Image (cartoon, rainbow, N blue to C red; front, side, top):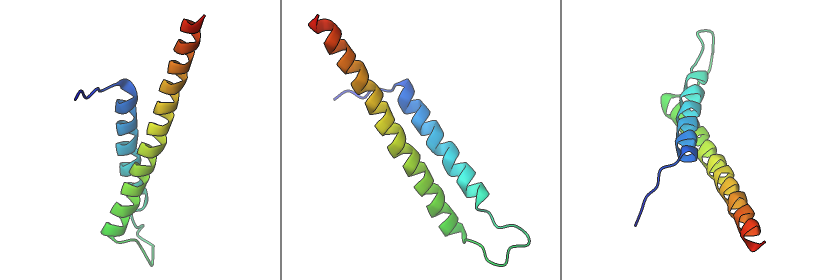
Length: 78
């Protein structure tokens, strides 16, 4: 079994980590807030954002590869 590491994977992972950190920091309670999310709730929201980035990024990455594969097959058919 071979595992490959490509640019799209690196971009998706970087985007997911960045989104998770930004969401976690953005949901921090302000000083004047009367109610706030707990640390666990903030972590759950951040993980959900990271998972969303991974799903969307992997879908787009597969789409680009699928288009590339389709163009290659069309060119080779000529």
